Image (cartoon, rainbow, N blue to C red; front, side, top):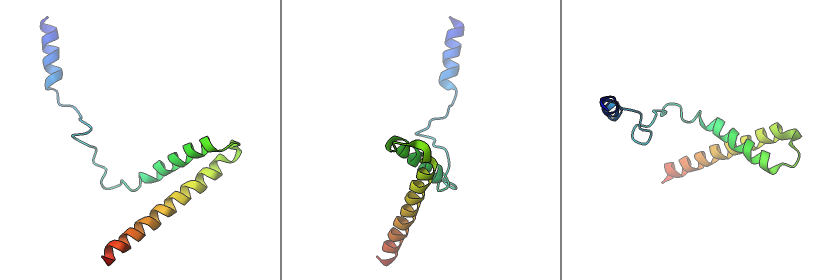
Length: 85
């Protein structure tokens, strides 16, 4: 019984990582993480939509490029809008 109580006390007093209260600090390189995210989204989308998967990589890279270009254009437009207003 003493072992159970001491183990419970140890677990309850041991500080752990709380993901919503102590998020991982990725402020410096979060833009770099968008590239694998865009690639993963494009890959899953194309894998679902294509009937023939023989040219999956080409189609995935094309869609990922289109997404990245649109994101850059949207960011530039919003930056320009913010600079003018």
